[in-house]
Amino acid sequence: MCARGRDLLREYCAEHGLPYDEVGKLVVAVDGSERGRFDALERTARQNGVPGLRRLGGAEIADVEPHAVGVAALHSPRTAITDFVAVCVQLGRDVEAAGGQVRLGARVTGIARSHGRVVVTCADERHTVDRLVVCGGLQSDRLAGLVGGARCPVIVPFRGEYLTVRPVRRDLVRGMVYPVPDPRYPFLGVHFTRTVTGDLEVGPNAVLALDRGAYRRFAVSPRDTAAVLAWPGFWRMAARHWRTGAREVYGSAVTAAYLRAARRYVPEIGGDDVVRGRAGLRAQAVERDGSLGGRLRHRDVRRRHVPAERALARGDVEPRDRRARGRPCRRVNTGSARSGPARA
Ligand SMILES: Cc1cc2nc3c(=O)[nH]c(=O)nc-3n(C[C@H](O)[C@H](O)[C@H](O)COP(=O)(O)OP(=O)(O)OC[C@H]3O[C@@H](n4cnc5c(N)ncnc54)[C@H](O)[C@@H]3O)c2cc1C
Image 1: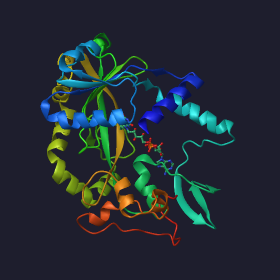
Image 2: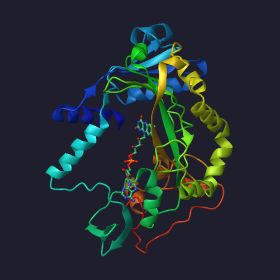
Image 3: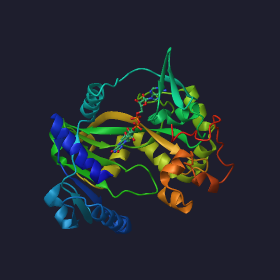
Image 4: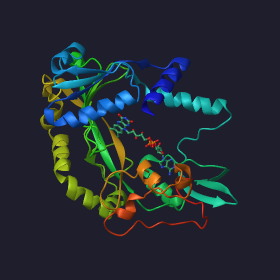
């Protein structure tokens, strides 16, 4: 999907005159303990036809990124950056050109089924549609609840904070430098990213957020805080990953600690080279047993010998919950045998 998506996005950007800059990416292993994950990543990348992929030894890294260090790296020269705000604006224009409407600032407060159609309530408006695809991000669990979907996983919000490299030090990284991903965590770890405006960002970290709707630091919503604290999956996740969580909180408060992770890849970067940058909120689906995910896995679908689409249509999207510790997730149906969040 990633390789195909890249091709489609490149074509789309070219067609509409949107920025698309192939700055390239290095995924860097900094010690031998990462070897297994690094080799697996290379195998996957080759199987998926990542164009121009090269494996570099430690000494070759400097040819691509003169200030980066590591024991080995994967170089993907065609990895690109774009301006996603501009992409979304263009997608909105396409919808309108095709006769559709884009409604902004319209909060969905109700979703119901009626005579085989779906009625969406938005403040004082109602829209009846044939099909509804809900992409609610941080609110997706609540929207699933509106349509009678499963009560778990629950979204636990995480704040991701970036540091911005001062313009005079932007040459520390030419393209993008990433760590070898650790599949135990959904977060990639601190990385260096170039933007189409020429900025160089370091981050993000991942710190528990207590407000799903505010990008401000220290924002607290009593409703969102209560939802996190009342979810048993949160405490199970915290018990499992408290060391990582504590490290992230410390790094958020102390820039020097944050930079320690970045310096493993680019040792020259110092506290004077960065300023606090933007932040975002990430929707982390947390299961009742504290595991991270909430995704339908192919393995689970195969085991049941049903095509994925039928499994989704049945609302059968959380097979892991059956194996989870604690009570199984409660399902709420609206009465229709075909109801469920995935179908909506
Ligand atoms: C710091 C950070 C770094 C990230 N880095 C990467 C990365 O490198 N690569 C990557 O692939 N992903 C990355 N992500 C994740 C990526 O941004 C998200 O996975 C993606 O944006 C999710 O898209 P979405 O459409 O599901 O949700 P969102 O983009 O969150 O969109 C959900 C929309 O639904 C709207 N909404 C919610 N409730 C309602 C309601 N009741 N009525 C009407 N509208 C509603 C919201 O206002 C919002 O506009 C990053 C995220 C963060 C925070």
